[in-house]
Image: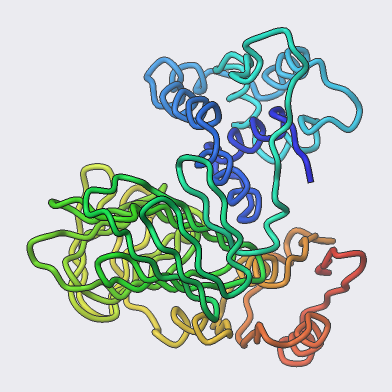
Length: 374
């Protein structure tokens, strides 16, 4: 499907406001990784919102007035992405549109605006920073410059060939899928649905760094001389060689759970060290340490999602990622009800819903790709 730059701009506003869905975030991350213009806009947006002037502006802004000015600036049309209902999800998002000029970097000439291409995110694929895209849905061998790509049974491995290669690539895993990649240093990464991993084909000599959106389980090849760093939008994880799980779909649900070894989680100027069985989570003001149930945290690797006293809002996010279904609430309060149970990714969605109804008593209806909870 095609989407225009107004659509991507809106996703970036939602992303920085923290109101973006997992699937929309994957679209936004794809655009940032694939297009220099989008990347530039994203960097400017983050810089604008991180400035003291923006903070002062936001603290004294009336959301209703913000929307009125925003809608005028956008010359809103019926059905526009920037509809009042969409912006109503976050007063912050409406404010953002005012703090940043709405000029778009693609529109530097008077020519007709061009559209970005969305590959519908139905299959796993790899895209290099040079713009080369590779469909990984079938077993194949592909040559990208000096790098030999091999795919087999939902797993990617490669041989960088040139030891001095500086090329980076991003692996995109869409909703309903999962995938495994073996990096050049021997580190293995299992990726959950609606996730992406940006990595270099060959690591540098001082550090090994990757960038994660979504969720992944890492088994890092041991190398005391070369630290391994997982960057996310919410916090970073530093390690020399260990096994751990990182969930970075949203700031509210961010976790870095240590299975074995030792890691440090870093957010802003705060650094905390974890022991096996501990996880770092984002609290109200800073990172916090908690214990975790490995069966719950790691069950996704076996195609199941185990949950214990989890709010329905969090359970529904897994249904969205694993079955590509939109979520709706007939009564908002229902989203805060807690349940205990398990979801099997290999079962048809209607069977999963029936099982949830029987075991938890929750009420839900699937119609036209929308799962409505009552």
